[in-house]
Image 1 (cartoon, rainbow, N blue to C red):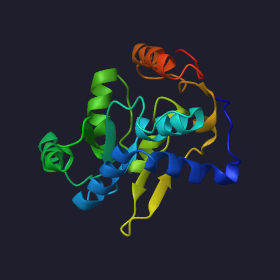
Image 2 (image 1 turned 180 degrees about the vertical axis):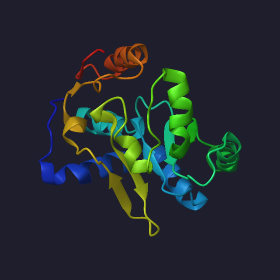
Image 3 (image 1 turned 90 degrees about the horizontal axis):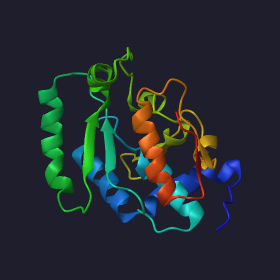
Image 4 (image 1 turned 90 degrees about the vertical axis):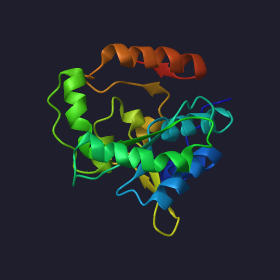
Length: 197
């Protein structure tokens, strides 16, 4: 199938429709709304892979191994507080065939810096987290507002999401992990070109 990029003015709607075409993504979005997680969003592969699937004619949900559900709560940065939210979310998503990974973006700098030896500053909110992803391609997320209307988060724009070349951010924190991801995604979406770190 030809890679046909929609006009820029239609791209936000295209992303929303691509994500909502995946029934599991809809389950996660609706579950997050019921849980009342502060400043939450469904991000990572559930967003950009949904676009790839829509552009290449693949089934919604193809290649999505888990659903990353972010939220932001800076009131308590302890692991115990985040773990309590994860445990509260478990019954909501226990019937899904793939895992839902719940993560407090207010705590990311704590474990990220320790794991990768970086000096990342604390994030300001969930949208800010998208500015720090390993690739501009990944910097898109979706949530439902209080009335159920989709709200797209794309603080760095959508151009990279629709580009057939996936590039790492300069100085990507985990080059080996990035390169492994490129290898696995190239097998699933051979139409794409991946730039290795």
